[in-house]
View 1 (cartoon, rainbow, N blue to C red):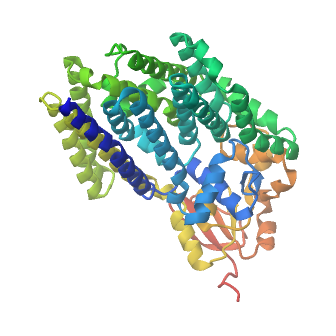
View 2 (view 1 turned 60 degrees about the vertical axis):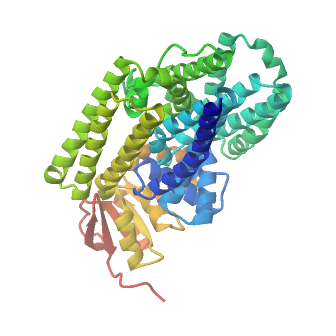
Length: 558
Protein backbone atom coordinates (compact mmCIF):
# COMPACT_ATOMS: atom_id res chain seq x y z
CA UNK A 1 0.00 0.00 0.00
CA UNK A 2 2.81 2.39 0.88
CA UNK A 3 4.63 1.68 -2.39
CA UNK A 4 1.40 2.26 -4.34
CA UNK A 5 0.85 5.54 -2.48
CA UNK A 6 4.35 6.71 -3.44
CA UNK A 7 3.69 5.81 -7.10
CA UNK A 8 0.42 7.76 -7.05
CA UNK A 9 2.18 10.79 -5.59
CA UNK A 10 4.88 10.61 -8.24
CA UNK A 11 2.27 10.25 -11.00
CA UNK A 12 0.31 13.19 -9.58
CA UNK A 13 3.45 15.35 -9.70
CA UNK A 14 4.12 14.48 -13.35
CA UNK A 15 0.98 16.12 -14.74
CA UNK A 16 1.39 19.76 -13.57
CA UNK A 17 5.14 19.76 -14.28
CA UNK A 18 4.58 18.36 -17.77
CA UNK A 19 1.77 20.82 -18.49
CA UNK A 20 3.91 23.81 -17.54
CA UNK A 21 6.87 22.54 -19.55
CA UNK A 22 4.65 21.74 -22.52
CA UNK A 23 3.23 25.26 -22.66
CA UNK A 24 6.73 26.75 -22.58
CA UNK A 25 7.78 24.40 -25.39
CA UNK A 26 4.72 25.35 -27.47
CA UNK A 27 5.51 29.07 -27.17
CA UNK A 28 9.13 28.43 -28.17
CA UNK A 29 8.03 26.37 -31.18
CA UNK A 30 5.79 29.26 -32.23
CA UNK A 31 8.85 31.46 -32.75
CA UNK A 32 10.72 29.16 -35.16
CA UNK A 33 8.92 29.47 -38.49
CA UNK A 34 7.63 32.31 -40.63
CA UNK A 35 3.91 32.20 -41.39
CA UNK A 36 3.03 29.26 -43.63
CA UNK A 37 1.12 30.04 -46.82
CA UNK A 38 -1.67 30.29 -47.52
CA UNK A 39 -3.43 29.31 -44.27
CA UNK A 40 -1.35 31.02 -41.57
CA UNK A 41 -0.90 34.18 -43.61
CA UNK A 42 -4.62 34.35 -44.36
CA UNK A 43 -6.01 33.59 -40.88
CA UNK A 44 -3.37 35.65 -39.11
CA UNK A 45 -4.07 38.62 -41.39
CA UNK A 46 -7.85 38.44 -40.83
CA UNK A 47 -7.28 38.66 -37.08
CA UNK A 48 -4.76 41.49 -37.47
CA UNK A 49 -7.13 43.45 -39.70
CA UNK A 50 -9.95 42.99 -37.20
CA UNK A 51 -7.74 44.64 -34.56
CA UNK A 52 -6.54 47.33 -36.96
CA UNK A 53 -9.99 48.25 -38.31
CA UNK A 54 -11.91 47.96 -35.06
CA UNK A 55 -14.62 45.98 -36.89
CA UNK A 56 -15.07 42.95 -34.61
CA UNK A 57 -18.19 41.75 -36.41
CA UNK A 58 -17.04 41.22 -40.00
CA UNK A 59 -13.94 39.13 -40.80
CA UNK A 60 -12.20 40.72 -43.78
CA UNK A 61 -9.33 39.92 -46.11
CA UNK A 62 -7.88 43.03 -47.77
CA UNK A 63 -11.19 44.74 -47.01
CA UNK A 64 -13.33 42.01 -48.59
CA UNK A 65 -15.76 40.02 -46.39
CA UNK A 66 -14.25 36.63 -45.54
CA UNK A 67 -16.87 34.18 -44.27
CA UNK A 68 -15.21 30.79 -44.68
CA UNK A 69 -14.94 30.30 -40.90
CA UNK A 70 -16.64 31.69 -37.76
CA UNK A 71 -14.94 34.50 -35.82
CA UNK A 72 -13.54 32.96 -32.61
CA UNK A 73 -10.02 32.48 -33.98
CA UNK A 74 -9.93 36.04 -35.30
CA UNK A 75 -11.26 37.52 -32.06
CA UNK A 76 -8.68 35.71 -29.96
CA UNK A 77 -5.85 36.49 -32.39
CA UNK A 78 -6.82 40.17 -32.32
CA UNK A 79 -6.81 40.18 -28.50
CA UNK A 80 -3.42 38.44 -28.41
CA UNK A 81 -1.95 40.95 -30.88
CA UNK A 82 -3.37 43.85 -28.88
CA UNK A 83 -1.53 42.51 -25.83
CA UNK A 84 1.76 41.31 -27.33
CA UNK A 85 2.06 42.96 -30.76
CA UNK A 86 1.74 41.75 -34.34
CA UNK A 87 4.12 38.79 -34.66
CA UNK A 88 3.75 35.25 -36.04
CA UNK A 89 4.39 33.70 -32.62
CA UNK A 90 1.59 35.80 -31.14
CA UNK A 91 -0.87 34.56 -33.77
CA UNK A 92 0.17 30.99 -32.87
CA UNK A 93 -0.59 31.53 -29.18
CA UNK A 94 -4.27 30.81 -29.87
CA UNK A 95 -3.81 27.24 -31.21
CA UNK A 96 -1.08 26.61 -28.62
CA UNK A 97 -3.34 27.57 -25.71
CA UNK A 98 -6.20 25.51 -27.14
CA UNK A 99 -3.92 22.47 -27.42
CA UNK A 100 -2.91 23.04 -23.80
CA UNK A 101 -6.56 23.21 -22.72
CA UNK A 102 -7.27 19.96 -24.59
CA UNK A 103 -4.29 18.31 -22.89
CA UNK A 104 -5.25 19.61 -19.43
CA UNK A 105 -8.93 18.61 -19.61
CA UNK A 106 -8.01 15.12 -20.86
CA UNK A 107 -5.69 14.74 -17.87
CA UNK A 108 -8.42 15.93 -15.50
CA UNK A 109 -10.93 13.43 -16.88
CA UNK A 110 -8.40 10.58 -16.65
CA UNK A 111 -7.47 11.48 -13.06
CA UNK A 112 -11.13 11.68 -12.00
CA UNK A 113 -12.26 8.35 -13.46
CA UNK A 114 -9.13 6.28 -14.13
CA UNK A 115 -6.57 7.27 -11.51
CA UNK A 116 -3.29 9.17 -11.27
CA UNK A 117 -1.29 6.61 -13.23
CA UNK A 118 -3.46 6.77 -16.34
CA UNK A 119 -3.66 10.56 -16.03
CA UNK A 120 0.14 10.83 -16.04
CA UNK A 121 0.50 8.44 -18.97
CA UNK A 122 -2.17 10.09 -21.13
CA UNK A 123 -0.65 13.53 -20.46
CA UNK A 124 2.77 12.40 -21.68
CA UNK A 125 1.42 10.41 -24.64
CA UNK A 126 -0.90 13.14 -25.89
CA UNK A 127 1.47 16.00 -25.09
CA UNK A 128 4.44 14.47 -26.89
CA UNK A 129 2.54 13.30 -29.97
CA UNK A 130 3.78 14.96 -33.14
CA UNK A 131 0.21 15.65 -34.29
CA UNK A 132 -0.69 17.65 -31.19
CA UNK A 133 2.59 19.57 -31.16
CA UNK A 134 2.33 20.27 -34.88
CA UNK A 135 -1.30 21.39 -34.61
CA UNK A 136 -0.48 23.71 -31.72
CA UNK A 137 2.08 25.44 -33.93
CA UNK A 138 -0.22 26.25 -36.85
CA UNK A 139 -2.64 29.17 -37.20
CA UNK A 140 -5.99 27.87 -38.36
CA UNK A 141 -9.27 26.69 -36.82
CA UNK A 142 -8.45 22.97 -36.60
CA UNK A 143 -6.83 22.91 -33.15
CA UNK A 144 -9.41 25.31 -31.81
CA UNK A 145 -12.43 23.18 -32.79
CA UNK A 146 -10.62 19.97 -31.79
CA UNK A 147 -10.12 21.42 -28.32
CA UNK A 148 -13.77 22.29 -27.78
CA UNK A 149 -15.04 19.00 -29.24
CA UNK A 150 -12.81 17.16 -26.77
CA UNK A 151 -13.86 19.34 -23.84
CA UNK A 152 -17.53 18.80 -24.72
CA UNK A 153 -17.09 15.02 -24.87
CA UNK A 154 -15.19 14.77 -21.57
CA UNK A 155 -17.54 17.20 -19.79
CA UNK A 156 -20.78 15.47 -20.85
CA UNK A 157 -19.31 12.01 -20.24
CA UNK A 158 -18.19 13.07 -16.76
CA UNK A 159 -21.64 14.53 -16.09
CA UNK A 160 -23.27 11.20 -16.93
CA UNK A 161 -20.84 9.33 -14.66
CA UNK A 162 -21.07 11.48 -11.55
CA UNK A 163 -23.46 12.87 -8.91
CA UNK A 164 -26.44 15.14 -9.55
CA UNK A 165 -24.79 18.32 -8.24
CA UNK A 166 -21.66 17.90 -10.34
CA UNK A 167 -23.81 16.82 -13.28
CA UNK A 168 -25.36 20.29 -13.55
CA UNK A 169 -22.09 22.22 -13.76
CA UNK A 170 -20.33 19.66 -15.93
CA UNK A 171 -23.28 19.71 -18.33
CA UNK A 172 -23.13 23.50 -18.56
CA UNK A 173 -19.39 23.23 -19.24
CA UNK A 174 -20.22 20.80 -22.05
CA UNK A 175 -22.82 23.13 -23.57
CA UNK A 176 -20.34 26.02 -23.37
CA UNK A 177 -17.73 23.91 -25.16
CA UNK A 178 -20.26 23.08 -27.89
CA UNK A 179 -20.95 26.79 -28.36
CA UNK A 180 -17.25 27.62 -28.62
CA UNK A 181 -16.79 24.73 -31.04
CA UNK A 182 -19.51 26.16 -33.30
CA UNK A 183 -17.85 29.60 -33.12
CA UNK A 184 -14.56 27.91 -34.02
CA UNK A 185 -15.53 26.01 -37.15
CA UNK A 186 -19.28 25.72 -37.50
CA UNK A 187 -21.65 22.78 -37.22
CA UNK A 188 -19.04 20.10 -36.49
CA UNK A 189 -18.68 21.74 -33.08
CA UNK A 190 -22.06 20.26 -32.16
CA UNK A 191 -22.41 17.36 -34.61
CA UNK A 192 -19.23 15.45 -33.69
CA UNK A 193 -19.51 15.46 -29.89
CA UNK A 194 -23.26 14.86 -30.16
CA UNK A 195 -22.79 11.91 -32.51
CA UNK A 196 -20.07 10.26 -30.39
CA UNK A 197 -21.91 10.75 -27.11
CA UNK A 198 -25.21 9.47 -28.55
CA UNK A 199 -23.55 6.24 -29.70
CA UNK A 200 -21.74 5.84 -26.36
CA UNK A 201 -24.94 6.37 -24.34
CA UNK A 202 -26.57 3.65 -26.44
CA UNK A 203 -23.69 1.24 -25.91
CA UNK A 204 -23.64 1.92 -22.17
CA UNK A 205 -27.46 2.04 -21.95
CA UNK A 206 -27.34 5.30 -20.02
CA UNK A 207 -30.59 6.72 -21.39
CA UNK A 208 -31.98 7.31 -17.92
CA UNK A 209 -28.97 9.44 -16.97
CA UNK A 210 -29.95 11.91 -19.69
CA UNK A 211 -32.99 12.96 -17.67
CA UNK A 212 -30.76 14.81 -15.18
CA UNK A 213 -29.01 16.91 -17.85
CA UNK A 214 -30.22 20.56 -17.76
CA UNK A 215 -31.24 20.54 -21.41
CA UNK A 216 -33.27 23.76 -21.47
CA UNK A 217 -30.71 25.87 -19.62
CA UNK A 218 -27.85 24.21 -21.49
CA UNK A 219 -29.17 24.83 -24.99
CA UNK A 220 -30.20 28.35 -23.96
CA UNK A 221 -26.61 29.01 -22.89
CA UNK A 222 -25.32 27.62 -26.20
CA UNK A 223 -27.75 29.81 -28.15
CA UNK A 224 -26.81 32.95 -26.22
CA UNK A 225 -23.13 32.38 -27.00
CA UNK A 226 -23.42 31.36 -30.66
CA UNK A 227 -26.50 32.89 -32.28
CA UNK A 228 -25.82 36.67 -31.99
CA UNK A 229 -22.88 36.67 -34.40
CA UNK A 230 -24.64 34.54 -37.01
CA UNK A 231 -27.86 36.57 -36.81
CA UNK A 232 -26.04 39.91 -37.01
CA UNK A 233 -24.06 38.72 -40.05
CA UNK A 234 -27.20 37.53 -41.85
CA UNK A 235 -28.92 40.82 -41.06
CA UNK A 236 -25.98 42.84 -42.40
CA UNK A 237 -25.09 40.54 -45.33
CA UNK A 238 -28.14 38.86 -46.84
CA UNK A 239 -27.32 35.37 -48.04
CA UNK A 240 -24.69 34.73 -45.37
CA UNK A 241 -26.60 31.74 -43.93
CA UNK A 242 -26.73 29.99 -47.30
CA UNK A 243 -23.08 30.72 -48.08
CA UNK A 244 -21.76 29.61 -44.69
CA UNK A 245 -23.97 26.64 -43.80
CA UNK A 246 -24.76 25.27 -47.26
CA UNK A 247 -21.75 26.14 -49.43
CA UNK A 248 -18.95 26.12 -46.86
CA UNK A 249 -20.27 23.39 -44.52
CA UNK A 250 -22.62 20.94 -46.26
CA UNK A 251 -21.38 21.21 -49.86
CA UNK A 252 -17.74 21.08 -48.80
CA UNK A 253 -18.45 17.86 -46.93
CA UNK A 254 -20.37 16.02 -49.67
CA UNK A 255 -18.82 17.69 -52.72
CA UNK A 256 -16.01 16.29 -54.87
CA UNK A 257 -14.76 19.48 -56.54
CA UNK A 258 -12.55 20.70 -53.71
CA UNK A 259 -8.79 20.52 -53.25
CA UNK A 260 -6.78 18.03 -51.19
CA UNK A 261 -8.43 14.84 -52.47
CA UNK A 262 -7.11 11.86 -50.53
CA UNK A 263 -7.99 8.13 -50.28
CA UNK A 264 -10.36 6.80 -47.63
CA UNK A 265 -7.52 5.38 -45.50
CA UNK A 266 -5.68 8.73 -45.37
CA UNK A 267 -6.46 9.53 -41.72
CA UNK A 268 -5.84 6.00 -40.47
CA UNK A 269 -2.37 6.16 -42.02
CA UNK A 270 -1.76 9.63 -40.57
CA UNK A 271 -2.63 8.46 -37.08
CA UNK A 272 -0.42 5.40 -37.42
CA UNK A 273 2.59 7.40 -38.64
CA UNK A 274 2.34 10.68 -36.74
CA UNK A 275 1.36 9.05 -33.44
CA UNK A 276 4.21 6.53 -33.65
CA UNK A 277 5.48 4.80 -31.54
CA UNK A 278 2.39 5.23 -29.35
CA UNK A 279 0.07 4.10 -32.16
CA UNK A 280 1.71 0.66 -32.07
CA UNK A 281 0.37 0.22 -28.52
CA UNK A 282 -3.31 0.67 -29.43
CA UNK A 283 -5.47 -2.33 -28.49
CA UNK A 284 -9.07 -3.28 -29.22
CA UNK A 285 -9.91 -5.20 -26.04
CA UNK A 286 -10.02 -3.47 -22.68
CA UNK A 287 -7.25 -4.82 -20.40
CA UNK A 288 -9.24 -4.24 -17.20
CA UNK A 289 -12.61 -5.45 -15.96
CA UNK A 290 -13.69 -2.56 -13.69
CA UNK A 291 -16.87 -0.77 -14.75
CA UNK A 292 -15.27 2.71 -14.71
CA UNK A 293 -12.39 1.67 -16.94
CA UNK A 294 -14.60 -0.20 -19.39
CA UNK A 295 -16.99 2.75 -19.64
CA UNK A 296 -14.15 5.14 -20.48
CA UNK A 297 -12.71 2.54 -22.86
CA UNK A 298 -16.02 2.34 -24.75
CA UNK A 299 -16.24 6.14 -24.82
CA UNK A 300 -12.73 6.58 -26.21
CA UNK A 301 -13.20 3.95 -28.92
CA UNK A 302 -16.56 5.48 -29.86
CA UNK A 303 -15.04 8.94 -30.22
CA UNK A 304 -12.06 7.63 -32.18
CA UNK A 305 -14.04 5.51 -34.66
CA UNK A 306 -17.03 7.80 -35.17
CA UNK A 307 -14.93 10.90 -35.91
CA UNK A 308 -12.43 8.90 -37.98
CA UNK A 309 -15.23 7.52 -40.16
CA UNK A 310 -16.95 10.91 -40.36
CA UNK A 311 -13.86 12.63 -41.80
CA UNK A 312 -12.84 9.68 -43.99
CA UNK A 313 -16.04 9.95 -46.07
CA UNK A 314 -15.41 13.31 -47.86
CA UNK A 315 -13.00 13.38 -50.79
CA UNK A 316 -11.23 16.50 -49.48
CA UNK A 317 -8.96 15.73 -46.52
CA UNK A 318 -6.40 17.69 -44.51
CA UNK A 319 -4.31 16.31 -41.65
CA UNK A 320 -5.62 18.88 -39.17
CA UNK A 321 -9.21 17.63 -39.48
CA UNK A 322 -8.38 14.49 -37.47
CA UNK A 323 -7.08 16.34 -34.40
CA UNK A 324 -10.32 15.79 -32.38
CA UNK A 325 -9.57 12.04 -32.06
CA UNK A 326 -6.17 12.51 -30.42
CA UNK A 327 -7.32 12.69 -26.76
CA UNK A 328 -9.47 9.56 -27.14
CA UNK A 329 -6.67 7.67 -28.89
CA UNK A 330 -4.13 8.75 -26.26
CA UNK A 331 -6.49 7.62 -23.48
CA UNK A 332 -6.86 4.16 -25.03
CA UNK A 333 -3.09 3.83 -25.32
CA UNK A 334 -2.56 5.06 -21.75
CA UNK A 335 -5.00 2.50 -20.32
CA UNK A 336 -3.57 -0.43 -22.24
CA UNK A 337 0.11 0.58 -22.12
CA UNK A 338 1.34 -1.56 -19.17
CA UNK A 339 0.04 -4.76 -20.75
CA UNK A 340 0.61 -3.90 -24.43
CA UNK A 341 4.27 -3.09 -23.94
CA UNK A 342 4.92 -6.66 -22.78
CA UNK A 343 3.72 -8.20 -26.02
CA UNK A 344 6.48 -9.38 -28.35
CA UNK A 345 4.52 -8.44 -31.47
CA UNK A 346 4.25 -4.85 -30.19
CA UNK A 347 7.97 -4.74 -29.43
CA UNK A 348 8.81 -6.00 -32.92
CA UNK A 349 6.51 -3.43 -34.54
CA UNK A 350 7.98 -0.53 -32.56
CA UNK A 351 11.52 -1.76 -33.20
CA UNK A 352 10.93 -2.07 -36.97
CA UNK A 353 9.31 1.34 -37.17
CA UNK A 354 12.13 2.90 -35.17
CA UNK A 355 14.72 1.38 -37.49
CA UNK A 356 12.94 2.80 -40.54
CA UNK A 357 12.65 6.25 -38.96
CA UNK A 358 16.28 6.13 -37.90
CA UNK A 359 17.34 5.24 -41.44
CA UNK A 360 15.23 8.08 -42.83
CA UNK A 361 16.85 10.66 -40.55
CA UNK A 362 20.30 9.20 -41.19
CA UNK A 363 19.75 9.72 -44.93
CA UNK A 364 18.57 13.28 -44.27
CA UNK A 365 21.58 13.97 -42.08
CA UNK A 366 24.04 12.60 -44.61
CA UNK A 367 22.64 13.76 -47.96
CA UNK A 368 20.73 16.88 -46.97
CA UNK A 369 23.73 19.24 -46.63
CA UNK A 370 25.43 17.90 -49.78
CA UNK A 371 22.54 17.25 -52.15
CA UNK A 372 20.12 20.00 -51.10
CA UNK A 373 22.47 22.60 -49.60
CA UNK A 374 20.85 22.30 -46.17
CA UNK A 375 22.74 23.81 -43.23
CA UNK A 376 25.26 21.51 -41.56
CA UNK A 377 23.36 21.90 -38.30
CA UNK A 378 20.31 20.24 -39.83
CA UNK A 379 22.47 17.37 -41.00
CA UNK A 380 23.86 16.91 -37.49
CA UNK A 381 20.35 17.07 -36.04
CA UNK A 382 19.25 14.38 -38.50
CA UNK A 383 22.11 12.18 -37.33
CA UNK A 384 21.15 12.69 -33.69
CA UNK A 385 17.56 11.74 -34.45
CA UNK A 386 18.76 8.62 -36.25
CA UNK A 387 20.69 7.56 -33.15
CA UNK A 388 17.67 8.30 -30.92
CA UNK A 389 15.33 6.12 -32.97
CA UNK A 390 17.88 3.32 -33.42
CA UNK A 391 18.50 3.40 -29.70
CA UNK A 392 14.76 3.07 -29.14
CA UNK A 393 14.67 0.05 -31.43
CA UNK A 394 17.11 -1.70 -29.10
CA UNK A 395 15.79 -0.46 -25.76
CA UNK A 396 12.29 -1.82 -26.38
CA UNK A 397 13.72 -5.33 -25.82
CA UNK A 398 15.44 -4.44 -22.56
CA UNK A 399 13.70 -4.77 -19.21
CA UNK A 400 12.96 -1.09 -18.89
CA UNK A 401 10.07 0.13 -16.77
CA UNK A 402 6.98 1.66 -18.36
CA UNK A 403 8.08 5.05 -17.02
CA UNK A 404 11.49 4.81 -18.70
CA UNK A 405 10.05 3.62 -22.01
CA UNK A 406 7.41 6.34 -21.99
CA UNK A 407 10.01 8.99 -21.19
CA UNK A 408 12.23 7.78 -24.03
CA UNK A 409 9.40 7.81 -26.55
CA UNK A 410 8.38 11.28 -25.44
CA UNK A 411 11.94 12.56 -25.99
CA UNK A 412 12.04 10.92 -29.45
CA UNK A 413 8.73 12.44 -30.56
CA UNK A 414 9.38 15.93 -29.22
CA UNK A 415 12.93 16.03 -30.62
CA UNK A 416 11.64 14.86 -34.00
CA UNK A 417 8.97 17.55 -34.13
CA UNK A 418 11.44 20.29 -33.15
CA UNK A 419 13.96 19.27 -35.83
CA UNK A 420 11.23 18.91 -38.47
CA UNK A 421 9.91 22.36 -37.53
CA UNK A 422 13.37 23.86 -37.95
CA UNK A 423 13.79 22.06 -41.27
CA UNK A 424 10.41 23.31 -42.52
CA UNK A 425 11.38 26.85 -41.47
CA UNK A 426 14.55 26.62 -43.56
CA UNK A 427 12.83 25.04 -46.56
CA UNK A 428 9.89 27.46 -46.66
CA UNK A 429 11.65 30.71 -45.78
CA UNK A 430 12.05 31.60 -49.47
CA UNK A 431 8.24 31.46 -49.84
CA UNK A 432 7.71 33.93 -47.02
CA UNK A 433 7.27 37.66 -47.52
CA UNK A 434 9.06 38.42 -44.25
CA UNK A 435 12.35 39.58 -45.85
CA UNK A 436 10.45 41.63 -48.42
CA UNK A 437 8.48 43.31 -45.63
CA UNK A 438 11.69 44.18 -43.75
CA UNK A 439 13.13 45.74 -46.91
CA UNK A 440 10.01 47.81 -47.60
CA UNK A 441 9.79 49.06 -44.02
CA UNK A 442 13.41 50.16 -44.22
CA UNK A 443 12.50 52.29 -47.23
CA UNK A 444 9.30 53.75 -45.78
CA UNK A 445 7.64 53.09 -42.42
CA UNK A 446 4.27 54.07 -43.95
CA UNK A 447 4.85 52.04 -47.11
CA UNK A 448 2.09 51.64 -49.68
CA UNK A 449 1.87 48.51 -51.83
CA UNK A 450 0.12 47.46 -55.04
CA UNK A 451 -0.07 43.78 -56.06
CA UNK A 452 0.21 42.63 -59.68
CA UNK A 453 -0.58 39.01 -60.52
CA UNK A 454 -0.07 37.81 -56.95
CA UNK A 455 -1.29 38.40 -53.41
CA UNK A 456 0.96 37.00 -50.65
CA UNK A 457 -1.37 36.79 -47.65
CA UNK A 458 1.44 37.24 -45.16
CA UNK A 459 2.86 40.53 -46.53
CA UNK A 460 0.13 42.81 -45.09
CA UNK A 461 0.63 41.01 -41.76
CA UNK A 462 4.39 41.64 -41.69
CA UNK A 463 3.92 45.23 -42.89
CA UNK A 464 1.10 45.76 -40.37
CA UNK A 465 -0.65 47.87 -43.01
CA UNK A 466 -3.42 50.29 -42.12
CA UNK A 467 -5.21 50.33 -45.48
CA UNK A 468 -6.34 47.98 -48.21
CA UNK A 469 -4.30 47.63 -51.41
CA UNK A 470 -5.21 47.11 -55.09
CA UNK A 471 -4.68 43.58 -56.41
CA UNK A 472 -4.26 43.56 -60.19
CA UNK A 473 -5.10 40.30 -61.94
CA UNK A 474 -7.24 38.86 -64.74
CA UNK A 475 -10.37 39.03 -62.59
CA UNK A 476 -12.91 39.10 -65.43
CA UNK A 477 -11.59 35.76 -66.67
CA UNK A 478 -11.13 34.40 -63.17
CA UNK A 479 -14.71 35.15 -62.07
CA UNK A 480 -16.03 32.82 -64.77
CA UNK A 481 -14.12 29.93 -63.22
CA UNK A 482 -15.07 28.27 -59.93
CA UNK A 483 -12.00 26.98 -58.15
CA UNK A 484 -11.20 26.09 -54.56
CA UNK A 485 -8.23 28.42 -54.27
CA UNK A 486 -7.04 31.67 -52.68
CA UNK A 487 -8.35 33.88 -55.48
CA UNK A 488 -11.83 32.38 -55.13
CA UNK A 489 -11.86 33.36 -51.45
CA UNK A 490 -11.35 36.98 -52.47
CA UNK A 491 -13.97 36.78 -55.23
CA UNK A 492 -16.54 35.29 -52.82
CA UNK A 493 -16.49 38.51 -50.83
CA UNK A 494 -17.99 40.42 -53.79
CA UNK A 495 -21.38 38.77 -53.34
CA UNK A 496 -21.72 40.41 -49.92
CA UNK A 497 -20.17 43.84 -50.47
CA UNK A 498 -19.65 44.99 -54.04
CA UNK A 499 -18.07 48.29 -52.94
CA UNK A 500 -15.23 46.41 -51.24
CA UNK A 501 -14.39 44.90 -54.63
CA UNK A 502 -12.70 48.15 -55.69
CA UNK A 503 -9.42 46.55 -54.57
CA UNK A 504 -9.73 43.90 -57.31
CA UNK A 505 -8.47 45.58 -60.49
CA UNK A 506 -7.55 44.30 -63.92
CA UNK A 507 -3.90 44.04 -64.95
CA UNK A 508 -4.60 46.48 -67.73
CA UNK A 509 -5.29 49.15 -65.07
CA UNK A 510 -1.63 49.22 -64.01
CA UNK A 511 -0.84 52.70 -65.31
CA UNK A 512 -4.06 54.13 -63.88
CA UNK A 513 -3.31 52.57 -60.49
CA UNK A 514 0.27 53.87 -60.65
CA UNK A 515 -1.04 57.39 -61.26
CA UNK A 516 -3.51 57.06 -58.38
CA UNK A 517 -0.91 55.54 -56.05
CA UNK A 518 2.32 57.26 -57.18
CA UNK A 519 4.31 56.28 -54.07
CA UNK A 520 3.12 52.66 -53.91
CA UNK A 521 5.66 49.89 -54.45
CA UNK A 522 4.62 47.14 -56.87
CA UNK A 523 4.78 43.51 -55.69
CA UNK A 524 4.81 40.78 -58.35
CA UNK A 525 5.96 37.22 -58.78
CA UNK A 526 9.73 36.89 -59.11
CA UNK A 527 9.45 35.83 -62.76
CA UNK A 528 6.75 38.31 -63.81
CA UNK A 529 7.53 40.86 -66.51
CA UNK A 530 5.78 44.21 -66.51
CA UNK A 531 4.26 45.85 -69.59
CA UNK A 532 6.43 48.34 -71.44
CA UNK A 533 6.33 51.90 -70.15
CA UNK A 534 5.24 50.72 -66.70
CA UNK A 535 6.00 53.36 -64.08
CA UNK A 536 8.29 51.11 -62.03
CA UNK A 537 11.97 50.23 -61.96
CA UNK A 538 14.76 48.79 -59.80
CA UNK A 539 13.36 45.27 -59.44
CA UNK A 540 14.48 43.37 -56.34
CA UNK A 541 13.76 39.66 -55.84
CA UNK A 542 12.92 38.06 -52.49
CA UNK A 543 12.37 34.33 -52.95
CA UNK A 544 9.26 33.86 -55.08
CA UNK A 545 8.34 37.56 -54.95
CA UNK A 546 9.72 40.71 -56.54
CA UNK A 547 9.24 44.36 -55.62
CA UNK A 548 9.50 47.30 -58.01
CA UNK A 549 10.23 50.86 -56.94
CA UNK A 550 7.84 53.48 -58.34
CA UNK A 551 9.52 55.95 -60.72
CA UNK A 552 10.32 59.21 -59.04
CA UNK A 553 10.36 57.67 -55.57
CA UNK A 554 13.09 59.14 -53.41
CA UNK A 555 12.28 59.24 -49.71
CA UNK A 556 9.42 59.68 -47.32
CA UNK A 557 8.08 63.23 -47.56
CA UNK A 558 8.23 65.31 -44.41
